[in-house]
Structure formats: C-alpha cells, structure tokens
Length: 416
Image (spheres, rainbow, N blue to C red):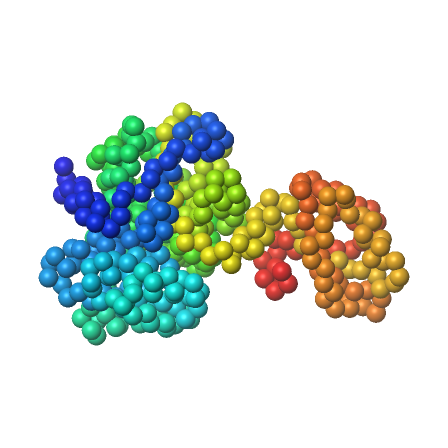
C-alpha cells in the first residue's frame, strides 16, 4: 500500500467522527435509460451537502496534529466555505471566511450556521479574485493557515476518501467513474486512489462548457487561464485548473473530458428533482448530465458506472431561471422581437398564427420602431419543439417580420 493510499484510509477513518459514509445508490431510472448499471455516489448528503467538507476536515486535522495554530482562513462563495465552517466548529478552531460582497444571503447564513461562534465572515470584493487576495493577505499578516479549496495535497487526500468509500460499497470494482471537475481536487484524489485499488477502472470527467479549464489544459499540454468563464455552474466554474490537481491529471486525454452546456444541465437538475426527488446544484448534476454524451459515444454499454453527485446546495430562488434555461435548450420556449403594425386587428392577426398548444408567456411593447410599427418582445411556450418550427412557418406565410433572439446572448441578457 502506497503512502497516499494509507493516508487516505486514515483520513476516511477520522471522518467517521463527523458523518457516516455517504450512500452509493443504484439508480433504476438512469440504469433503465442507458441500459447499464448507473450508481450515484451521493455527496449531496454530507452534513454540508457537498464533498468539500472532506478536504477541509483533513487539512485542518493534519495541520493541528503538526502543531499549527488553530486559526484557519479561506476564501469561498459556497461549498468550501461551508465545509471549513463546519470543520472549525468540530475542532473548536477559529476560522475567518472571506466571501465576495455579492454572495447570496442564503449562502452566508448557511456558512454562519455551520460555523457558529467559531467563525467570522468577512464580506469583501465584488469579484472572487479580490476576495481571494484579501484572504491571503490576512492569512499572512495574522499567521493563520490558509485553506485552498483544491490546490492542497491534504485537501486532495481528503477528497480521495470518496473513492475509498465507494470501493467498500460496490459489489465489484467500477468499470467507469464519472467525475465533476472544478479546480480538480476531487478528480485528482479519486483517480490517484483508484489507480492503486482498481487499476482497470476508466474515467470520464465532466466540466461546464463555459469553464472547461481541464479540457483546455490537456489540449495545450500545460495549464492555461481561460479568458472568460460562465459563472452559472458556480461550484465548478474555474478559469484555471489547480497546480497540484493538474500534476495528477495531466496524463489523461482531452477526449475523456465531457463539457455539458449550462442550459442542458438545467434539464438534468429538473429531471432529477421531479423524477427522483434528488436536489442537485448545477455542479452536482454535471456527472449525470455527462451520461448523455457518453451514451452517444457508446462508452456506457455493459459497464458498471459510478457518477459522483458532488453537491446539493441549490438555492430554490434560482428555480425559475433553471426552468427557463431548460425550456429554451429543449426547444420548448422561444423569444421573438416582433414588428407589429400599429393598426386595429394587428394583434388579432398575430394571435391567429398560434397553435393550440402555443402559450404566450411574455408580451411587452419595447418601443415604436417607426410611425406605423411597434416592436414587441414576445415569449412563446409550447409542448413540442416542432410546434415552434410550425409557428415560425405560419408567421412567414402571414408576412410578419420578426427576429428569434432565444440564443442571442447579448439581447437575451438585456431583454429576457
């Protein structure tokens, strides 16, 4: 047994002081859809509803065993902050948690609840980079231990306990493990552990299309920083894969990384909520959504597949946005700017083009584009994608002038 594997085993044993092993569940719904065994490792069921507690706990445990001062600092707007707060309270250690000023109140409140009197929350910076810089400066000035969310050997070791658990829970070794990727700590830890314990296991990595830092780095053969990151998948939207994680992951091929589009992830979040009663945050749904692409590539058939559901800290205030994005991706909702004549009966003429399953979800006059015409923002929901194709054909035949802005990011940002 290697030192890394032995250390992971020790970390997993110590974790039992906090919570039992998270469930590994055979999911009948997904197994039937893809014609193979699909198991879900439910990291959304830890006390802080994500795997981040594992790494934070292990890093603190080792720092305190080495005689480090029990004052820890981190920067996070989400799961890492909550994991650090929970572990600080467990150890009776002091924690200072820096969060961006723009962090939703729900996340701030949950972090405060988990940490209690053990933690102080400092809100600073409009952007995470500003928050991170402030936390690192504070850590240096006060001689506190800075806890990275992923770029730490002890954190990676803690996250690897997920692999230790699933090997004890499965009836046989997994053929394929699908891992969500943000900074890379979870993937680095689990692949390193399984390389020794289950050498025949293969891997697929899932990171958001708008934050594919691992895939970009593997293609380039070196770490790169993305110019732009879509922050929707806030638990995995990372512009640059961590240094230590990349050192462990650089041997994988870019073709092993699946990049689900953010809007499609919304379909998976809703499906798991409505069909299975499982609440997943966007990052937590990554591995399940990636099954769509892996199935099309023929990578699932006849395999025992484990998907790691990394987190369930979903703010239900986001549910309308998630539903909206899912409908648009599925082709069940479109937005148009319609040029409507300013005359009696014009609106009635438009309404006659609607099909029996077409519903007006938004109707808003924008401005008059000419003396005799007005611009209308209109949203149409329906039950089948073909209905909207047929609607546009009827609009063309009736001579209406319109523009489909459903996938126009700039216009959608300001108008929808």
